[in-house]
Image (cartoon, rainbow, N blue to C red; front, side):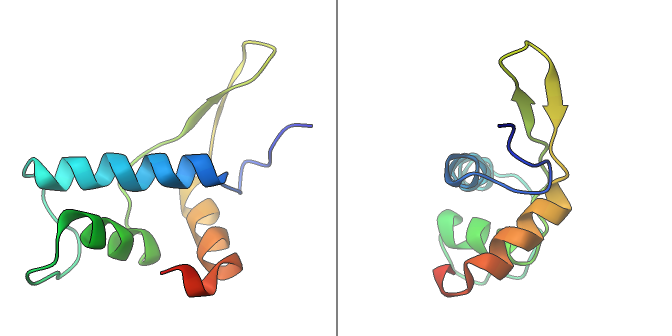
Length: 85
């Protein structure tokens, strides 16, 4: 079974949030108004607002690559996990 292009795995969500937190802590521009929040809270706010500026490229067992539709995938994740953020 191949995971749908408009869905994220929990591992991809963790990777997105971790990578974005690192970018913010190293001085990347913040895409939401955050005040004095730390990098991980800012990354979660960006994720919830569907403003994560990243791409996910999955490598399939057949060695082919699939680009995830990130806007749809994040929207689906937030809708399916409402109490998480």
